Image (cartoon, rainbow, N blue to C red; front, side, top):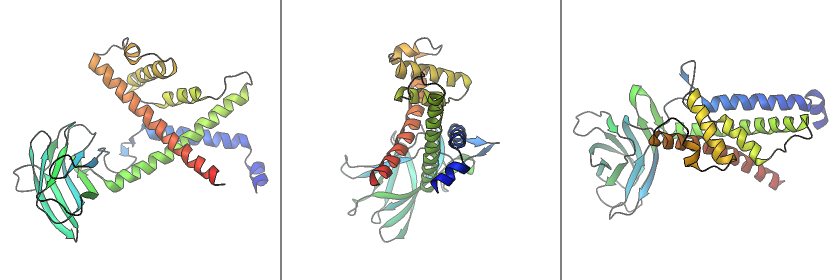
Length: 280
């Protein structure tokens, strides 16, 4: 079977297919929409939650990384039935509407304060939402499902968040194969060429990072190459960029975050293949 595959699909064609798929994955990772339509449904709010046991009564802490948004939040909570209190970490109280879903589960909806109907509340950037039971829960607190209804009738949810994670993982694997194929092709063309090292992979990854526009993309590439490949300190790498100090730091944080996202995706994909190889 292997020999038949080699005869029908020569290695050079397999390389080209891998490079083509990697290029598609790179474009997809850098795009949110195609022809004005989102690649994946909903809006990525970066919703996260954790249990805070540092207070006398354990509470749920909700956070997003979507900046300032207006929304209504629906939570499915595993806990005993209890009156709930919710407020922003800056002290603004929220309206809580709750209903028992079944034994040990409650649906609560967080909306704007002092409203007769469920209206969106303003969730400022860097502000958490604190959700506290009126009495201590004996079975512990956890969120089994969540939905964030944002403007324009778009919403984010646990299921959509999982779908985005799977989608990015698939794109990361395709991108990895494309990078490997490009590196292999480069080595095959010249025996005296540079070896396919981690530094070469980092350079390729840096070139895959994209900003909000062409100018920001070029600045991100410049800063990342200086810091990661030339080992220049961040403040020196940023000093010639014509931005304010705050804007320079924001540029660095965005560039670093997007590079680490791509690197983490490839590392996770490599770990999967390492595990497969070690099992055989």
